Length: 295
Image (cartoon, helix red, strand yellow):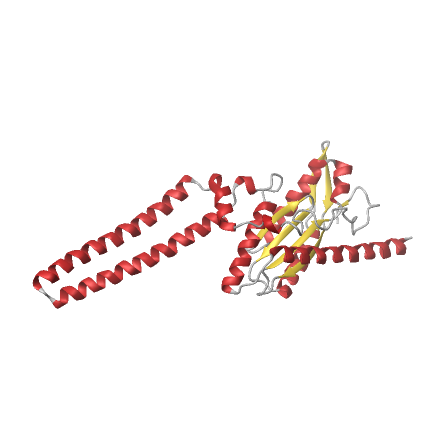
C-alpha cells in the first residue's frame, strides 16, 4: 500500500495496478532468450574494469609460466635419463608431468570461474536508471543462466514477482519524482533484506523480481511474508514543493518455484505472475470488504 498520512481517505490496501499480466516478457518471446554467456559478455565490456581484467590475465599467465617450467624441467630430465638411463630421473620426470597436468587443471578451473564472474557482472547498460538495480534484460539472461545451472547441478531456484501498490496514484498526486523516490526506496529495501546470492531486479513500471537461488517454494514464501511486513514498517519521505510527505509503502507478490525437469524460464515467470494476479485479486476483495464495513 501507499498511504499519505496527510490524506487519511486512502484505504490501506491501495489500488490495483492496470498493468497487463504479460508486461515485459511475452510468452511468444522464446527466441529472445539467447545464449546467456555469449550475449552477456558481449554487453558486458563497459562493466569490466581494466584492473579486474589485468588481474585475471596475470593469474592465468602465472599458471602458464609454472606449467612451462614443469615442461622444461621434464624435458631436461628426459634427456638426462636417455643419456645415463637413471631410474630415479625417470621417476622425477613423471612427477613433473603430473605437476603439469595439475597446474593445467587448476588454470582451467580458475579461467572458468573468472569467465562466470565476468558474465555475472552487470554492465551499466543493463542497470535501471531509477533504482540502479539490474534491469529486465539482465533478468532474462540471469534466469536463463540459472536454468542451465539447475539442469547441470540440480539446484532449483524460486522466482518472486511483485509490484508496488498504488504507485500510479502517487505519480498523479505528487509527481513522477515522488514515484521514483518510492521505487528507489523499494530497491534499497530489497538490497537490505535479500541474501547476497539472490538477484533483485526491476522489470519495469511498478514491477520488481527476485531470483531466489537454491530456495524451495516454502522457504521463498516465508521470506516474502517477512519482506512484505518489513516494507510496510518502513515509510519513505518524499519532498513535494518543499514539503516533506511521508508515504507508507506496500507490495503485492507472487511466487513460483522451478522444478528439475523445467526447461523454459518463461514458464516460471508466467507462473509467478499468475500467482501475483491471484494475490492482487484477493487484496481487492479484502479492500472491498473493508470499504463495505466502513460504509
